[in-house]
Amino acid sequence: MIIKSLDHLKSISNKIAEKVSNGDYIFLIGEIGVGKTTFTRNFINYLQKKKGVKQTEVLSPTFNLLYEYEIKNLKVMHYDLYRIKTSRELDELGIFNENVRSIKIIEWPELVKTKVKNRLEIYLSYSDRDNERKLSILGHHKWKDYNENKL
Image (cartoon, rainbow, N blue to C red; front, side, top):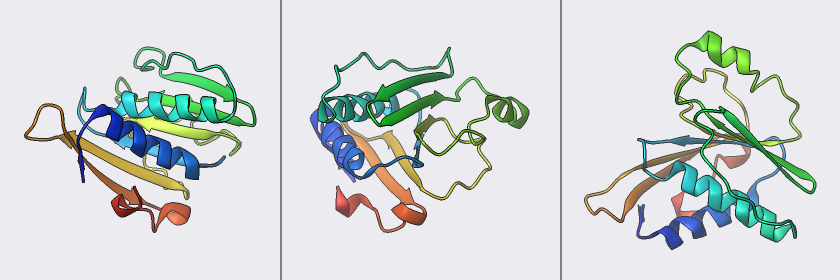
């Protein structure tokens, strides 16, 4: 699927946010600057607006590794694993030791070996046109039938 604009990406993230629930994982895969954090910002701001919570600034957690957002009965944990280089470092974060009462968005999940059930993998890549991106989706368990046609 081709994402034609930032508004189109926002629409996609909003549709996914409508289906998400505690215990879900969203893996964002793609090069630097392709739109992973923009997707996450739109996703979190949409949930905040829907739940009547003040929208906050959503930044990339590249240096902090994790930002958490409490949105009424939802907790969104936004990880950026770009600086994580070994499985040991990943294990020390305890991402998969946490309870399932949260939604976890993980940028740069390439080192993740744990096969979590309710996982939506979103692949973003550059297109031939500067303002467009390519998107593909692979869902597991609850998300297994979710694909680009549902967006």
